[in-house]
Amino acid sequence: MAKKIENVGCPFCGVCCDDLVVTVSDDGKKILEVENACIIGSTVFHRAMEDRHALPRLRQPDGTFKEISYDEAIDYTAKVLHNAKKPLIYGFGSTNCEGMAAAAKVAEKAGAVLDNCASICHGSSFLAIFDNGYPSCTLGETKNRADVIVYWGANPSHAHPRHMSRYSIFPRGFFTGKGHKGRKIIVIDPRHTDTAQVADIHLQVQQGHDYDLFDAFRTVLRGHDIPDVVAGVKKEQIVEAVDIMKKARFGTIFYGMGLCHSDGRNHNVDIAISLTRDLNDFTKWTIMAMRGHYNITGPGAVWSWQYGFPYCLDLTKRDIAHMNPGETSSVDLAMRDEVDAFINIGTDAAAHFPIEPVKHLRKHPWIAIDPHPNMATEISDLHIPVGIVGVEVPGIVYRMDNVPIQYRKVIDPPEGVISDEELFERIHLRLCELEAEDAVNVPAKAAPEGVRAGE
Amino acid sequence: MAKKITLNMITQRSVEEGVGIVKGKMTPDYFEACSIIEMHDDDVRALGLVPNQLVRVTSECGSVVVKSIRGRQALYPGLAFIPQGVYANQIVPARTQATGEPQYSGFPVTVEPVAPGERRKSTLELVQSAVGMWKGDQ
View 1: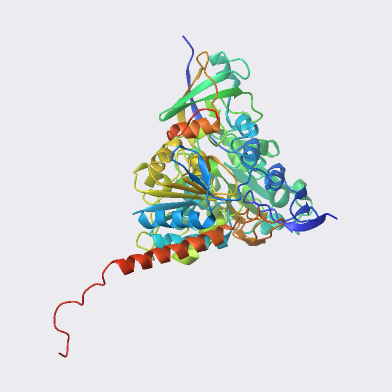
View 2: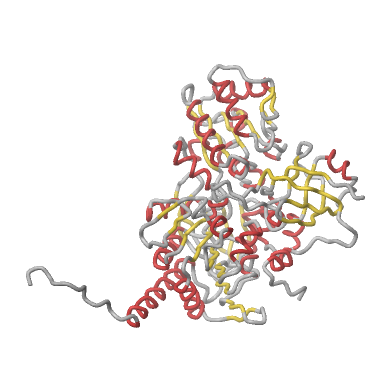
């Protein structure tokens, strides 16, 4: 008799849908059916069992892989970290908070740089939030209260397929009983995206000119005149949009990579926050980053608690953390050839970094930790397979609105495959042993010269 | 003389690319989802392309061959789109404006029809060749 598991969390995007129903086989080893998920979420579960390795694979001199034991892989990784002057541990978008905390212990012990995918994603949002605050809310508040929704440089139809139906446009909430009929949707994007198709107003901003348009919004909001066309958008359209936003009972601006990946980066987010603040002189407005992976908000929360910084953590001075994006960010470090070992965990840097930093990083030992083979594993010296969080490994993840959710497992991982958390705990243990061995081999420091007080 | 035009490139997510990622970056799904370029009809006409013709896209830091398709999500003339991922990242400049974030959107590229005999490469060939590990199809 197949078993239905309810309220399963989806390990793909930042929406963190936790209403999935997964049917598993009698022996609990196979996933038979996935209900409520989008096409991507459903594929995550159905592909979970395919193309898996049960043992770590070590690159041989002839370029092929040879399977080795987990103990050997852990020893290899610990030695790479121990011998490197400045290793980089990067990724974490797709693992649980327990794994992130364990990895931070390893980074501190190894004197590494610890970075997560926000570094190439919503990192500039952090910079803007540090400068200008974050008047945000939870997705529940948006669902229950918002009557105007703005998507700026975000395309949830593609990147967060159920965002609109669960939280923003379509759901009927406590004060929004009419669902989408009671809401106004404004989409600002240089493309007429699938999200723009469902909008009441689409402003086709000129790519890279979001700052100008935000500035025009603020100017109109404060009662001043603007030129006839700003950033490719007509004055009348801007005035109309601002009027709708001003008359809202509750509004949320969801923004995405259109702001963070274009010229201006954090300044685009900065002025979006300023616009939100201005709107709060008239009515209630909130703003939220459309975080990409299901737990990319996690490392920000976990490491801020551990070290005071959310990403780009330089732990080369061990527990004295230092963060300065541009200097301690993965891509910049790689381009300056400042790191001499690379661990890719819960992401695929070889596919998602521009190819130049990949070339630089590959000059040094490259270890990939991932349940499935991907670009990072296929150019690695060592691939360590782990269990899939949310499918085979339970754990805490943070949704895009900073709400922690307990994910569950629905099937067992392949026999012998361990979790990210266990892997990093064991690497940490091995690093401690290596340090202790060093201490034995290096002679103890002589007593300081001079005469002690009192003698 | 083959025609060549300069466009402003953006690389962002598509749902097909999302499905491709979870199916695997070495699957045909990912290949078809990511090795494409979308342009405005005016630009396609300026290049004299027929549907599904291969083009070479070149930026300040690299070059990649992709297939020109007519997308569902309209762009304005002068703007081009390649879904994020292995193909886009062959041409994305690594400059970060001191934020850590590369220039994934808003960088100039030239687009031209490919020379005869050129083909789209597999993801593995692109990435492994870049780091000197490609040994040819197994």
